[in-house]
Length: 210
Image (cartoon, rainbow, N blue to C red; front, side):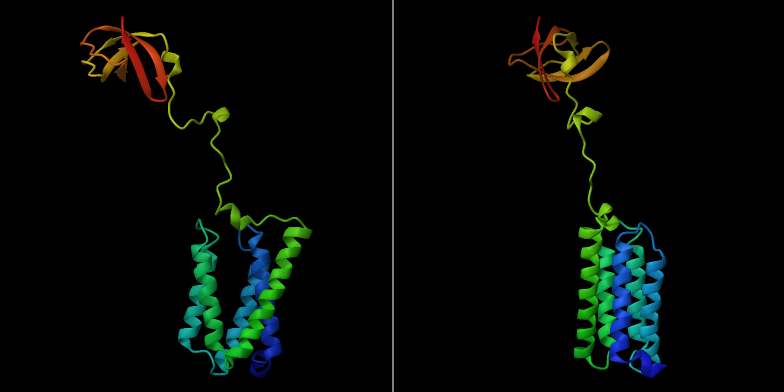
């Protein structure tokens, strides 16, 4: 069994199954059957190499950390965890290999097949990658939905108020029991003076003394 699992052709098949499973998981919001199949293929790979004495405890631990990081990617925003997990996984594959060049060819074939599967899923079957939904913000803050970059108090235009403080030229005034920061048209306005709003520019409320 160890001889079979460490055969270059079997290694390529196992890695291709694992790569294809990872691609299928990109289109799933949570880990499904494809993910478990890919994980089982990788476990078979490392089991054979461990029994053959090619993979040590450190390599197995690196593999486990890679799997854990990839698993956490389904629960964490962004792609940092998944990227680090894939890097750790590929590094563990090379560390477990007796012939790095042969392992590189196997990984290349697995990646090529995975890219083909990804192309078919996205371009032919028109599937959407769920993973990107956690990385990209698709919602927009539209004014029609009530979102504004700042509060525009155009409702105050033409309203009368009383200054609470001296305006030199900025200060505080009251409009219908609402305290607001205002700025005078340019001149000095004393306290307890009657004013009127003549202009509103975003949060800047310009007043004039009556």
